[in-house]
Image (tube, rainbow, N blue to C red; front, side, top):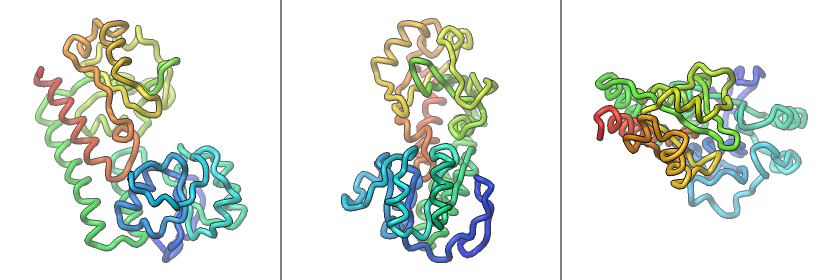
Length: 278
């Protein structure tokens, strides 16, 4: 809460400013959330990877990427608050900013519930009650819809790719895994070692997923990749036989914030189609 001393995801004790008027966002999903919450005028800079909302003001300063932010440029902007993520941003960059007297709040939502709380926390930086409700309520509604839908049908088993050459997926210790679970989709590599384990397509085929998801980020999977899998290494799986190998918007799978709602709606619809054989 603004004005209070809180422990962030990095374990640091942070005094959050009561009225942060100059905010630097080092997290693309956070940037989108701030603008959705009507706090865009407070955003002093973003990263080169912050591509949403699509109408970000052109003069808004860019402080390089999430993994190599321009620390000197950020300090020169004299921000009241820098928002970072434990996974997306490097500890060394956070430390360098803090050493220069910059207040950095590091978050790390790894479940849908935590992501909803995170969005609500961003709203507390200054969003009006009406705007906060307009943004957060649809997300909570989507979570409730997904929960109802998932209890009304059988669980669908899925493989979700994160990278190619080498092939990588995700385990249960990730936000995307929990997003799938909320939509009634069981990640076939839930118990794999590591958060983003390497896998062989032969092993994927053995697990026989009913649904294969190919997000278009961080690796840019395409329809050609889906076609190659469905008629190649995964041709014998239920997903390939039933036409359930899909390229999806990667921001829906991995971004927090307002995208939680369309993400759950999409995943619930895909799961329903598989469960009903359509």
